[in-house]
Image (cartoon, rainbow, N blue to C red; front, side, top):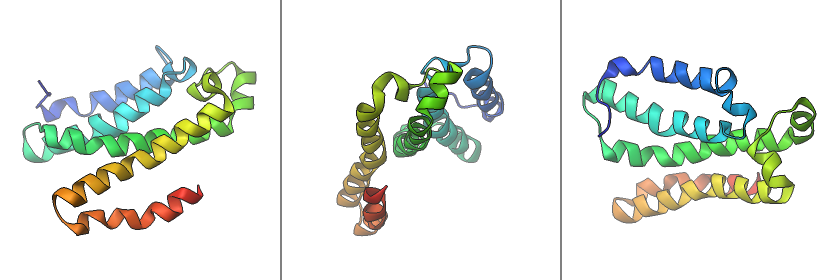
Amino acid sequence: PLPTSPHLSPPLPTGSSYAYTAGPALKYRALGDALIMATFGPLLVSFSYVSQVGTASWTALRASIPLALQSGAILHANNARDMVEDAAAGVDTLALRLGRRRSAVLYELLLLAPYASVVWRAARTSTFAGLPLATLPAALRL
């Protein structure tokens, strides 16, 4: 079951920060992308929802997936850009493990996959839900 206590909200982001760079240092073990996606997607959205409504929701959790993917795209783009420096510093990132070509493919997937949810939502609810598709041309230029 999903946690429903708003008192859990402060420790989780703090714990994510710690896990990213200190303690288990997931950033240096090619697990930083997964942690950031979980933190800025499901954790952030779910705990925001719980703090406002008082109960957990699978709908809110599902709605967090596009945010997680976009957060992952931002971090992955940064890691792909810094591959040479990270390798020299001993930082093991997902971008380094994948290499330039596969990193570019992953970036495109992370960036474009949220648009599928926009199409799905617009088809199920209203054409207004499709308004984020107006940003697709800009995303394709990235």
